[in-house]
Length: 345
View 1 (cartoon, one colour):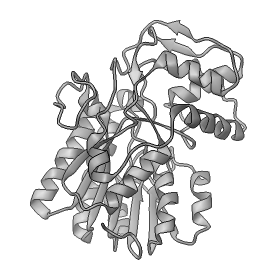
View 2 (view 1 turned 30 degrees about the vertical axis):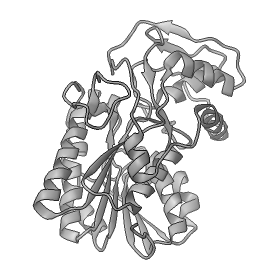
View 3 (view 1 turned 120 degrees about the vertical axis):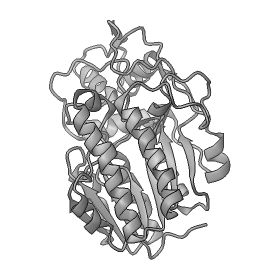
View 4 (view 1 turned 60 degrees about the horizontal axis):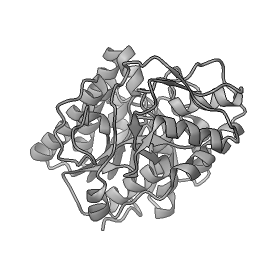
């Protein structure tokens, strides 16, 4: 078991959905310092306001695409959580940006980690690498070659880069493949925000949540607090050079999700359906979670109904009944991997 106490920690994308929850959960372990690198494109200062009061947190506003900034942030770091990324839907619209952030940015981070002598890396990956998976529940050794998104391609490259850095430089790492992440601190403001946010906006206005397709597409939802727990477990474990699915192991259709969200919001609205889109046409997601349970001791603890109630309460507390978005595609991923560009999360 690796101890976190007294170590200097860096989180890329540290002010975002997952990075901020990792920060909160690190504080009781009494690290020497927690450095958050974020460009605040999607990360929010309010996500880390409570953590800053601990006196353990330092914020560096910068971007993983800037190698010099990354190198400066990495100086003296023992433990690295690499969470910075952009959303899958944004990748489709801005592929050059996606490449720069997800590929070049990750290379910058890992290169700096080697030069700084970082002892351990916990890196975010995604179920997107499985593409149109053929086996369910999907295990980590399922072939990753039927992905057709630039996001999934970049995440697969990142995993391969980590393996090569392990061979070349002895870089100690664990990769966590997140499935469909949700929870308080989701991006409620950006142009590429999550389907749950769009649905809450509609339901609050008395409009039915809009599903593109027939609602049969399934996802494996896991709360951001649980994702953060998995990161801490991976950081403290003795495993290395391994990849783990991080999910609930429960399959939920979009139709079931929409109805559960209506219930959480106290609404009796029923979903409406629109023509299917091709943004992320993955019909099914269901993770095999046995390796994470056996090796890391990780099992998701927050059920979907409880998680949705917490999400609704948090979202209503923001005081935003956002502007006119019309719902999100049945194929849009829900909080794919959670960071925005380098600096950001």
